[in-house]
Length: 121
View (cartoon, rainbow, N blue to C red):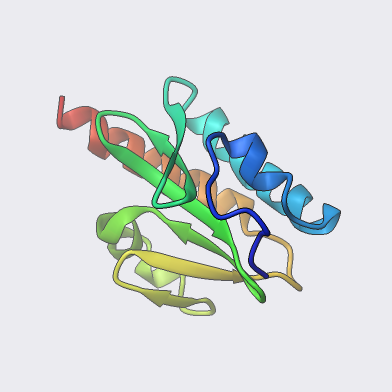
């Protein structure tokens, strides 16, 4: 599932390109991230929604069969024991579209990444 538009300037613009059920999941993810990182700025980076706080905090994106969540390699490593049921790589995890998002896990990962990025300042 690739949006029609290749270039986005805002997260709202990015999200609006998807069917309503995917928009809802992306908004849920965005809301949880913003609750845990209210001081983070929103931007588009690598053509993905990105939250920025002393550097990139997390990215997320929708694909044909999953929502990709990119909390950097440190965010994946710190929560590896909680992620085995999801396909993951060094800096990313895939949440299947046909399952509810693990919002509490996302919340914990974002909280971890906020603390990590704040230590860099």
